[in-house]
Length: 261
Image (tube, rainbow, N blue to C red; front, side):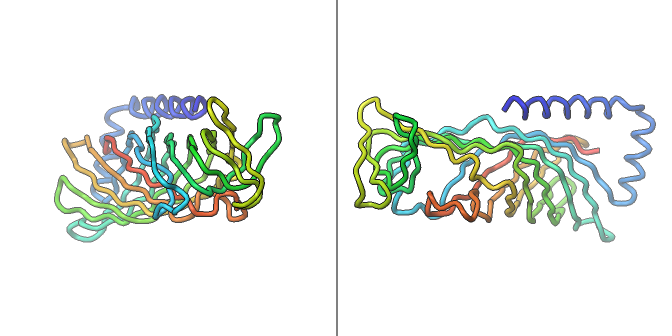
């Protein structure tokens, strides 16, 4: 998180330096770009959502709590409007973002590898409570088609591609028991204040992709408000990871504002 904030602050100061460039030169560039259908947008927003299997498998009996983390995003987009009326267009962007959440759930026969009280690793099927914290940082490139409804409202849809710069998927289990190896194996209980941690961070994929759809509203000449829904299409875990037996997908809503040049 600290590394992410340092990068974020560095980019913000870089953008401020660019905006401090001579006003006359900027105006000439903006006029030329608008004439040829080009548009440049800088955005800042927040991601709210979670990483979840769809639909919920039978192993997850209930979601007991959900807490969204502070997940910020900073994005730069280049748009090219085409046609006589400039209603359609294409957009490519680069987004620095993090996605995260904390949840507690009650599960039964949930695939798990925990660290025991003596530091040993125990693998099997867990029944009881599970607390999970997901916190991942990405460089993301959206590539979308654009449709302009009018001078204020536009829509976008298309794929995105992400490379993870920081991966976190960890937590602990409590108030339950682990059946080693299989659902009928040796029973190891954790009750009261006894907990056992787990960490699957290294098993999170570095490359992820999915679909993005959203809308922008131009509140003023340069100020825009936007909302983008991103839906991951490949499992957050690597293909050779078999502890959790079902796929988990990041689904987040990115909401914020931007400045259009």
